[in-house]
Amino acid sequence: EWVDFVVFYDRIIDRLEMSKQQNVTFKRMLPNRAIFVEIDEDKMTQVLYNIISNALKYSPEGGQVTFSLKDKDDKIIVSVSDEGVGIPKESIGKIFDRFYRVDKARTRKLGGTGLGLAIAKEMVKCHGGNIWATSREGKGTTISFSLPFDHTEEDDWS
Ligand code: ATP
Ligand code: MG
Image 1 (cartoon, rainbow, N blue to C red):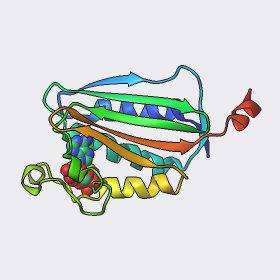
Image 2: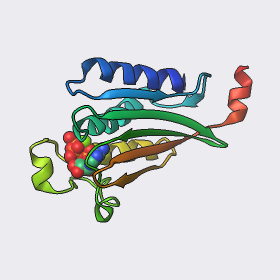
Image 3: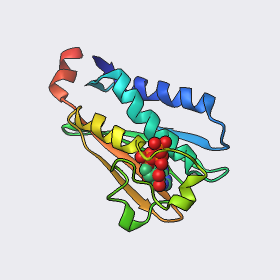
């Protein structure tokens, strides 16, 4: 369906902000105009949930999670940044692989199967987008994904 991604994203952030158990603050950097994209809402909810739950899981006490959304020519870019443990350089290319988890000892106590990002990648791909990570160990991580965005479609709405 066609949805205003700004509203869609904002609602998902709301839901996770209300249910979170961690002492983490949320910061939103969202455009104040509509951006219509064609998505499967259930799949995209899962993508965002998997990324945001990691940001919460790997955040330190009192950390901040920043949500941003930008449009660039023919795509939108959605990012979730945290101030958590980060991901070592040699692991960054593997975190989207099934069952891959950085440092088993470190992550064991946090639970999980290592499937969250593999599922997110599959679902972003089936929307015609890409997903990637940037990180600095000990500083934090940003997970971003793109979705195709057609300005001409947007013009039809105005
Ligand atoms: P699951 O999502 O299946 O519950 P998981 O969170 O371990 O388990 P993924 O979401 O696929 O699995 O993430 C893979 C690995 O990437 C994680 O185990 C963790 O080591 C690393 N990782 C993912 N997101 C972050 C993040 N925001 N900060 C630090 N490490 C991360
Ligand atoms: Mg996960």
